[in-house]
Amino acid sequence: MPQLSRRAFAGSLSLGLLGAGLAPRLATAQSPASPATPAPGAATAAGIARVTPLAQIRIGRFTVTALTDGYADMPYTFFPGRSAGQVEQAAQTQYTARPSGVRFVFNQYLVEDGTRKILLDTGAAGSIGQTGALPRALDAIGINRDAIDAVIVTHMHQDHMGGLILGGRNNYPNAELYIDRRDVKHWTDPAKRNAAPDYLQTSFRMAEEVVRLYPKLQAIDGERQIAPGITLVDLTGHTPGHIGVRIEDGGQSLIMVSDMLFPVVHPGATDVFFLFEQDRAAAQAMRDRFFPLAASEGALIASTHMPFPGLGRIVADRGQRRWQVADWALQD
Ligand SMILES: [Zn+2]
Image (cartoon, rainbow, N blue to C red; front, side):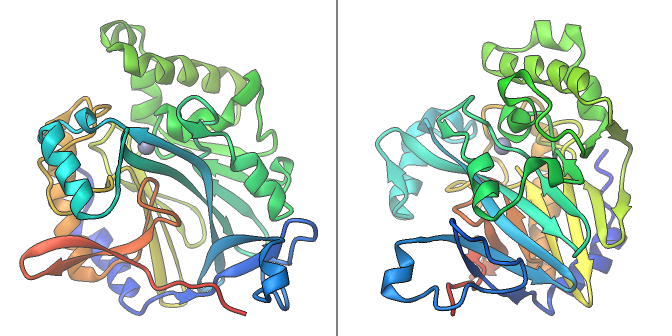
């Protein structure tokens, strides 16, 4: 049963209508700017060559920085519910068709409140496509992985937890780790693993390693505030314990929804899936609830696989739902 209550969303998402302060930042790779200060003169022609552009938004006292671990092209056959030809046609219509499929990026988000640093997901870490860039992205903003206070993994697919265990190590040794209990149970169950197709075996193997290397793992149940203004939200469907993260302060809010949305096929339809979704009825049920609610509330959304920085809204446009990129731009 989806646990996403109308009350829980109505309270938070309506705040999203006020909009977030969009404040992108340019930070030089050589001398990272302080999180609150845009690099001076960063937009000069000479400066552009040296800077690492980052999308950064403010939600009240929080600074949220979009990072990316890289990308992979997903074959057009990976979207059950539509034929490969239909998916390719849709991608062409959106000018996003690639010879080898739909380009997925892997976005992660760093949330800072002035004291704590909380990372949402850790990327595929080289286990798929052109990935493994997250450590460099953190370096570029001057953040050592030892300084991460908490990691929230939205679900135990390889592209969300891979960075936890890159190189067979605990890469965030000082972090509390939060994962929904249903996913921990599912992905460490030998019977489920034995029954699963080959393309899910990497996730099962990684899940075992995560549990072994992270004694600070907290398996969480249902909606839970893990710090003031940061709440885990139940978005079961894509996996049994798929969760989102709601960030709210000062009348502003953002919800990171992880794999609720995939590019090209969502949010225009809910009866099209990604291959890795084992329970399609559950995935569709959650999208059927979430898409119209998010559209009616005008919720500001962060999404793992939508084009970088994955920030936008679901809007209803003449009877069709579509993704509206959030208004952010590089500024002095
Ligand atoms: Zn994913």
